[in-house]
Image 1 (cartoon, rainbow, N blue to C red):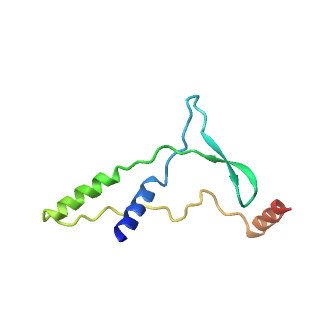
Image 2 (cartoon, rainbow, N blue to C red):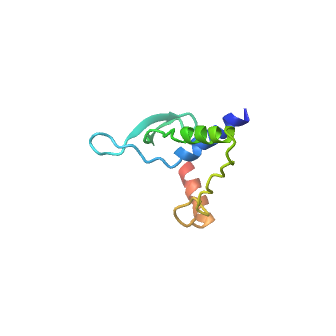
Image 3 (cartoon, helix red, strand yellow):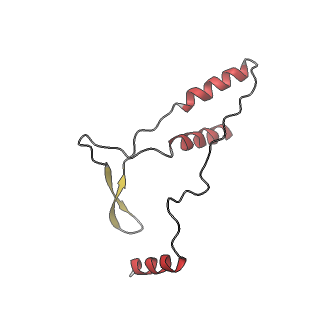
Length: 103
């Protein structure tokens, strides 16, 4: 079960930054979905296909370990300190915007 969770984490990490898909005309691709919470139709982005290249790397590392090789330590990725692309607005503005959207 632990191995399955680790593979799931690898899959998520490798595919979390996929680009939005583009149709044959060059337009960004979207799909319509009905939300249960808002009870309204919304559009969501379609993303490019997932990559499963990490499976080959995991298999090679497992075979190397089985044959007596040294354990490999994967490189530590450089992650941004914050995922936000812009500075957060004042909290009062966010609260006012939230209250106006619920009206």
